[in-house]
Image 1 (cartoon, helix red, strand yellow):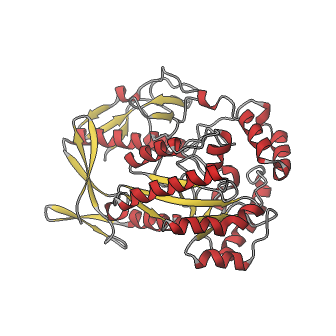
Image 2: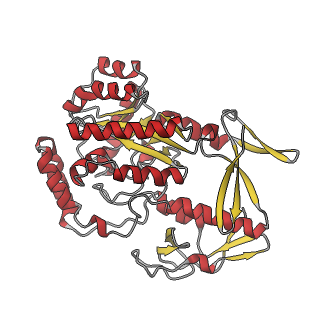
Image 3: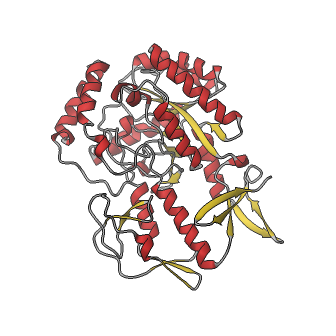
Length: 430
């Protein structure tokens, strides 16, 4: 794919569009805006195709990184964003009943529906941008298709992972019961453990998780909400977190309360991270990576983004005890061939209403798996596969193509084709 930049990029960064459905952030030849509204410059109208080359009015890599690494986020001006307010809340949080916590969280998140970006309930701006550029490349080259290695093994249409974050002693004590429910559906999950202060973590508890085929990951250090507050203190905490990674045998990390700083994550010795939401309108830290696909962070850690709403948020913040939102998100991710990432806390899922919804969720996920549509697996397996896929090569063999490299026996050849104005995918049979 031969891409170039047409024109002189503006010095200031801002928002613009690339077609109707992809919001971008970065420098562009046209006017950009400091916030998303209905009058954004559409950079697609300024594209030029010339001698097998696509000339764009922006830098694709810059825009992709700005979205996936949340470079577009600016701090809000509310007093609720102040450090003293957050410090006070997280010091009191372990002693606050859920009823009071959810009231405070609703106050903090007031007005979330009025935000215009990232798109709710799933944002695929990054993925749509890739598709738009691929479409332009096909037109510029006068080709009808190009081959690539399909996203998921055995030609599965999407992927799903189930994760359980343990926040409290009560949650720790209910973890075995939650694993019983998972096992009744034939599902294994990753379990994220807070190693300090919140509850004790015995070797027996860890062994009981491993023995049942579940993964163990590290969930911050002490869940106080301050992991990314100060750089020097973060580095001190990172040393202890890395020690727990070795002690637990963990390859994955998730930050408590989904607080994050992608540039600091490189100091953690994990293969993959699960701390960045696709759309973070209902998280304490606003933002979102705008993709439903895994991607690499600075430093080489693989990000498995959270692409669905957390159970706590659904039940206690939105006061929604139905499958409607989860089903809508799963359908959008499935149609986008992405990663369906689910968080369920043993701390909050054992009320009768919540447990009924959880069982419905498991039934829906199992149905997708049984139809050979979705690869239901552990986060660590997604990490292994994505890294293998990145190391595979497409090699021309006669009039066709073959995939070479470790793990290629599970890989499938696919073609991106133009169907009118749409880019469609065709997966070749094994």
